[in-house]
Image 1 (tube, one colour):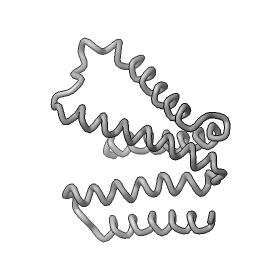
Image 2 (cartoon, rainbow, N blue to C red; image 1 turned 180 degrees about the horizontal axis):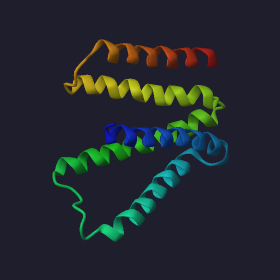
Image 3 (cartoon, rainbow, N blue to C red; image 1 turned 30 degrees about the vertical axis):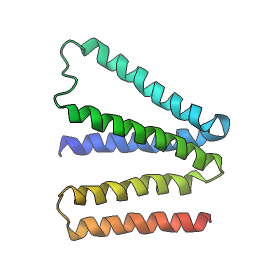
Image 4 (spheres, rainbow, N blue to C red; image 1 turned 90 degrees about the vertical axis):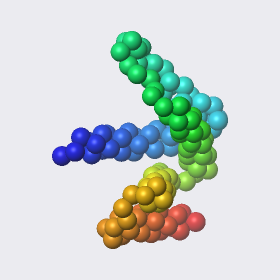
Length: 142
């Protein structure tokens, strides 16, 4: 098995847990402050892992890496803020979670196609299932 698949599974588990933790926090914290706490926690943990290896770690090899990391950070704050708002508005985790995660899947696949990744019938079918499933969940919450 490709190690990347294992890393993707670990990320998916973390994303699922992230969704639950956001839902649980949403009615107990200001949305923007909550988003900042999530980001600050990531910074602190990242530094704990990085600092012992700082002398042997190449931090970046291309300035575009900094640009894309900053843009990802902007997206991360946006995700945290609006996920907290979605859950804070009373949207059930069984609805908001799949919409947030499924929507992110659809966007990632579409951008992948735009960046030149191969388009196959199975990828299109999978994308349609994600979009239809998220749409059904959005419709039943309405």
